[in-house]
Image (tube, rainbow, N blue to C red; front, side, top):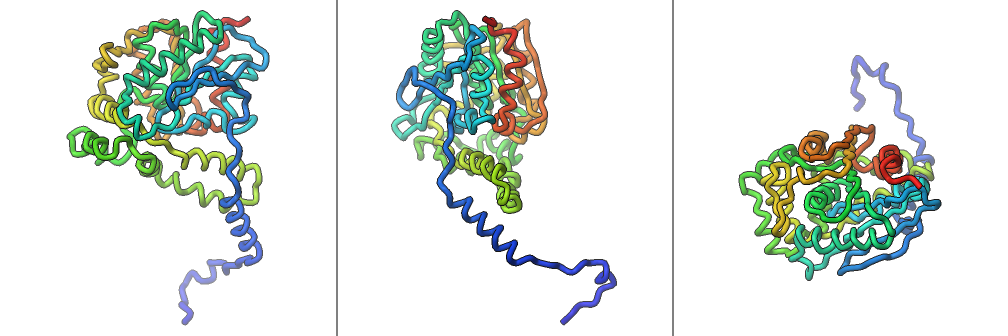
Length: 357
């Protein structure tokens, strides 16, 4: 039965092009079922390996700087977001600009790695990899570049490092964990002990990759899901589809988090905020950010929905660096790397602090 309303004449009739819609949905299903795109096109060689972790060297196309860049990425995700596609790759952009680049890929921990803690990752893996990179490059100093949680790890390492770190660059980096992105009940649960990370790790050994993915879905919803709607609307755009597939591969390609490392991260940083308070211990060493005297460059993204600017800003006042710069760029947490913009921003600052040849 037709319903008569006073607005019926104002609502245009819905016209559906069934043939066009069928083509659009057919293309969408083709996209979702095609083989995954090839990731990591920038030429590289293996320098060193320990357990699951690998140190990669990406040589400069034409070397212009004497100080190499050493990338530290998050333990939550795989680092190929930094070399996601030709012409959009952060690493390719920097090697094209004349930098030798090193990247420590933490690898995928197995159950046998459940007892690896942050102290082990920093002292046994990161410190050794930095030494190897310095020796391999023949440089006297090095620049450490940390992204997201990799920036937190880089800052912790720099606070106890004996190696010659000239520059420290951290982007979208959580330092002060009193600010929290995610459901308020999570933050409350962490701080009052209702969320018992110790019991979770005792049961599973490592934080399962499915839990990592679910955690990021909860934090980023509804953005995490709306990308499928955008894909449906733009499935005819080959360039967009290629970018979407690369990004989707990365966001769903989570890794388990070594149990002891997650325990320390949750209790010492998420819960007790020991890094910002100057109370964090790494092994027997006091990881106080005031020990950092390297040139410092801090980058935040204005549209970041994972790491808020107030989480990053405190590092500016916690270090002892005389040369320190803060920059807010118009980008998202991931798009800063996904678009290759990160390479441009790094080069603008590092070019005058990397011993031009």
